[in-house]
Amino acid sequence: MQLQLVVNRRAVGLDVEPRTLLVELLREQLGLPGTHVGCDTAQCGACTVLLDGAAVKACNVLALQADGAAVLTIEGLAAPDAPLHPMQQAFHERHALQCGFCTPGMVMRAVAMTDEGVAPTDAAVREALAGNLCRCTGYRGIVEAICDGLRAGATPVAAPSDAGRAADGDVVPVPR
Amino acid sequence: MYPFDYVRADSAAHASALLREHPEARLLAGGQSLLPTMRMRLAAPSMLIDLGRAAGLSGVTEVTEVTGVAEVTGAAGAAREPAHTAPGQSRAPARVIRIGAMTTHTQVADSPLVRGTIPALAALAAGIGDRQVRNRGTIGGSVANNDPAACYPGAVLALNATIETDRRRIAADDFFRGLFTTALEPDEVLVALHVPVPRRAAYLKFEQPASRFALVGVAVADTAGGVRVAVTGAGPGVFRAEALEDRLQARFEPAALEGARIDAAGLGGDLHAGADYRAHLIVVLAQRAVARALGTADPASPSSRPPAAVDPRGSR
Image (cartoon, rainbow over all chains, first blue to last red; front, side):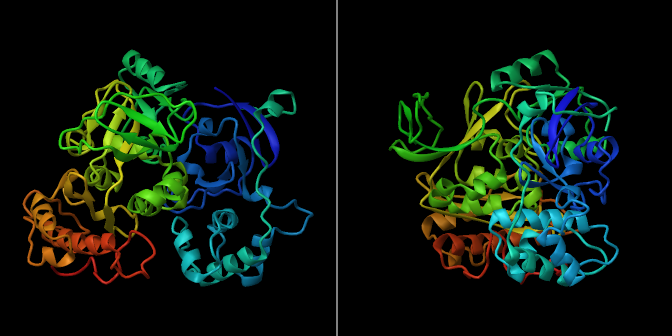
């Protein structure tokens, strides 16, 4: 089925099978492997992306449910040659990772916390982080980094979805 | 996940017509239970009918329901609706919160109207799963799915809510029929929940720590029709604890449940908790829920979760 959406501020139009998951669309059809598949059962949060600004688990959303929406992935937070997003910078400074597998989901979840008004406190961040699991570092550095990132503010979240623009030809065709 | 066809419904009526045409189809609301079930190949519908764009299925409004008519207040262009005359319902005008089926858990948790009128329901919504799940999962999906460990069925039953479908109103007492079963016809579509504003209410659950589903969840509501206590997580489906209701009807305070016992026969037992332990938890959580409803619970507890004082690995 035909699908049009905006991924990392770029309009995309392509054809997908109905059973394609959003995370499969991102990784396999759009070549954006930064969004990880961890548990594959909507528990670990490694696949967290922002869908119209809201954190969701991309392994538990059909690609077709994102039709007309704006998706922001870890690749869309900062351009390769640009400074890191404040939340990425905070993770860097606090060394809030060990193997790094859960990190993209952690960072995307944390970016959404600014809009949600999560207080930069240990208790509030741990509660807000309930859907993201890390199996190596423990959470101390992650929570500290998120508190730093929340205090640093500034959260450029994806522009509102603009399916009309996609229809007008600013479309990146992607083969199946 | 096996292949399926995918259709977007324009309205509840459209979805119902599609269900009649395709008996092996399933409705897709938020998908937070259905999609994992399909991915585990425990379900293989021929078609998913996505309600994500169906008109008029989400949002929270206040309605005043009296015998004979129900009027929507505070909403432009509101139409008069048929009467709500569930058995046992008060005949006096009542404040009722109408929550559209596709309203997400996050929207219920954040709704100023719900927080202001039924804070227990907002707190329940804020405690489901995790934020990512709450951003997608919907109240209608949860109620229609009737997972025996889901939170919403407990509150819907305790609050004496009414389920609005594309064709009728169903009282909560008649709606839940045990393990993933409801009174919905195969082609019937849940449209909204009508939740009367209680005098006071609270919901507490003892969480399975990994899934955050309720090992046991207890909703207590002091309503116009009396005190109602509903239990989720403990048995094959949500049920009312009449013995506890009788005690609380006489005296709405935690001490009224001292010495109360729930028969473990018929309750569920698994590796997380035995039936006898679940029976014990029902009374403990009911007492704490009453304290919460009275505003005498520990204010430091931030959500619907009980203090972590009780160890699920306990030997009871």
